[in-house]
Amino acid sequence: MRTVYVNGEYLPETQATVSIFDRAFLMADGVYEVTSVLGGKLIDFDGHIKRLERSLGELDMQHPPEMGDLLDIHRELVRANDLVDGMIYLQVTRGAAADRDFVFPDPETTRPTVVLFTQSKPGLAKSPAADKGLKVISIDDIRWGRRDIKTVQLLFPSMGKMMAKAANCDDAWLVEDGFVTEGTSNNAYIVKGNKIITRALSNDILHGITRAAVLRFAREAQMEVEERSFTIDEAKEADEAFITSASTFVMPVVEIDGVSVGAGTPGSVSRRLREIYLEESMNAAI
Ligand code: PDD
Image 1 (cartoon, rainbow, N blue to C red):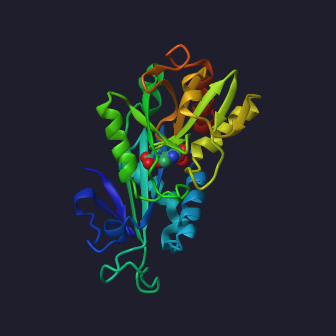
Image 2: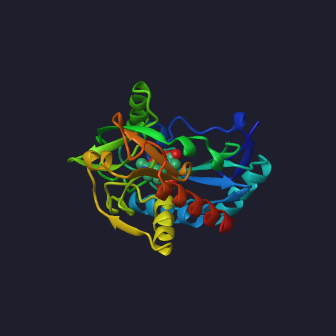
């Protein structure tokens, strides 16, 4: 049985509870982070905590008292669960107010709820999907306008994954005003003539921590990066496509809406970026 963390306590998962009045349960009033663990070490930890601070700030949410201890809590969960490869999920909510009310509760009396748990994924970095590549469909992006905040309001991304599954595909790319925003739970890229193209940062997409690292490594390796929007038609005609996220790292995309991208197999730029990302981030893991 897993050991999880809830509001200052480490507990067996079956004994960990949160109030039915918690605002994340009633209103999706919570933010989260997913940090991957490889070889028992945390990947891109600082980036995830910085983004958590930003998400909290954008929603006028209090920083929980354990903010400064988050590294120790992550490490303790890795230790207590003998986690080698997998993820740590962290969620902070606006807490459990006395009643259901749209108005934010007084932060003096309603403290944030903090929950962390581990998910074991042995061999996470050696996923067979990386050799095969993913098939994606395109769907309309009908999410809210602050996708830069990592909230737990994930119903549409979840529906998108189900639409992909129904089409015998692995994931969906979201399209707004004719341009790809991102994947349901990842950032989206295409490669054309050795140029890596991905949408620029704005409130329209999550500012991926893996994205930031991958683009930095790409530039360091003298690869050309262009941060601009692209369409599904352009993606279908690209040489390669891929996604990035904390749980997939760099993952090739080989088919979009039934059309093969490039040769229909993972391309050399995607494969190289995956190798560089895994090597560099494992070296820097803490
Ligand atoms: N998802 N875009 C969206 C909509 C996401 O949900 C995620 C991450 C990303 C990639 O961000 P990062 O590189 O920081 O993981 C982009 C996580 C993994 C999840 O919800 O499980």
